[in-house]
Length: 192
Ligand SMILES: [Zn+2]
Ligand SMILES: [Zn+2]
Image (cartoon, rainbow, N blue to C red; front, side):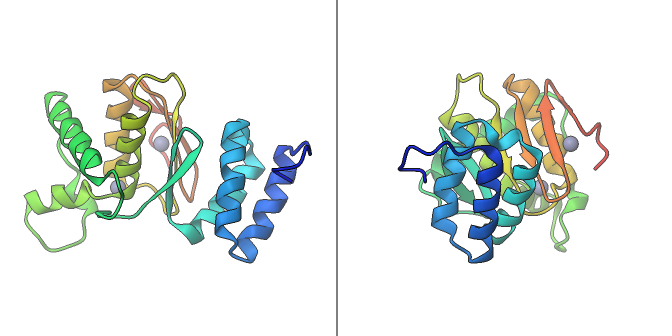
């Protein structure tokens, strides 16, 4: 369908993605996901829910100009790992100036505060947002991240700050809901 001259709308994409998820045809669904993003279908509610189901099976997703990137917690395997962690350091430094203190209560391990803060910086949604900032530095388009679990409180605070510091709109669709971060606030008004 993608190669042919068929007109594929959001509803069709949703059904095909659902079928892909059922048989775990992940590479097909990644191709179709690129199409969905290019066409701007990802705001469609039904399609969004289908994508969530799909990526619950595949891990967290970040997007680079219509190309999908997957991130896992403490991801050291990504080919842009060095730049991403460099960007996170920059974010961390800038946030301190904004008076941010890490919400270490979201880390379960029995370790010291500094390790806890480090552990929070390994969260896949932070990696995905940092990557989005690197590869679309001066674009007006929002950075989109799909997360297979509920976003944690620390990531929520940090992404709000990033949207203000970098003047970027960031959309995170987690397992529970849709978050649109803009100018230091989130569309969920901190209830999720
Ligand atoms: Zn987090
Ligand atoms: Zn939110």
